[in-house]
Length: 353
Image (cartoon, rainbow, N blue to C red):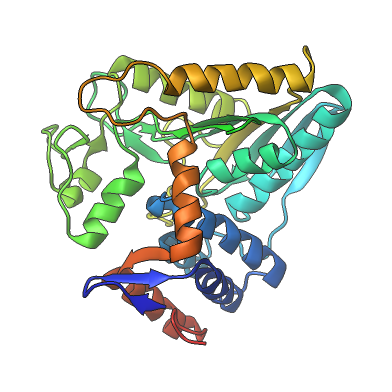
């Protein structure tokens, strides 16, 4: 680990992985699971999704201390049909429930062309793109849905009811299609990040508790996020709750407890689908057609001031290449808070050998 400036610290992916694994293991998470969770978190940092990287260890560890997240629990997979599974997350880390779900989907899709899994009693699973990537590594298309704790009003309202629940999808190609987005103007994690760093936020991201737009992240966290596209973003968030909460039998309609609260079990629900890309046409034709789409999307005439047009997921792939080589930038204060947790549980600090 080396300093880039007085406020920024550069950490290698391997150092971040070792640190996160050690911290989770010291907190009672079985080593194999700790390593897997750490890998998912570090991948988020590598891709530039800093809101869902190793800084998420802080609320997770708080949940573990509160007894509202079970460190050694194992999700239970119940096959409903050869292509559908119902998974009870057993209040384990959401990463483990999501892995069980997408792995069932992939296995089913290899045989039957499609697989789906509904998950209940789960927790936050970090960045959705890691699940999409797991399907891509198996040459599968995927859909990844989840609900989350209330952070956004239904369109026209002021009360926090809907989750800022990510919508993710992927398809194998060169480059692959990887969509991972929130139905709000900005992900709530970006507000937490701004609050952590003492930064302001754009006024179109959130409203305060009185229903007024604000650039203060602390007031935004007391208020609500704003849906993208007005009723469209609100509708997408409701869709996430239908498929992930209502359908699975997990918590829904504002009942999910978020990791930054941690006062009770989260009860998050998920829904996953994996599909063979050669189900209807050959795999070669699929990839060829996806490449045509890529070239038309990125090669079109650009608006004034636009230097490059990107395919969904392409920016993150480029950033991952850079950060694997040059390291991951963290704010010094973030590293200090992580190291405070390391001292608390008796594990090595970030930067120690």
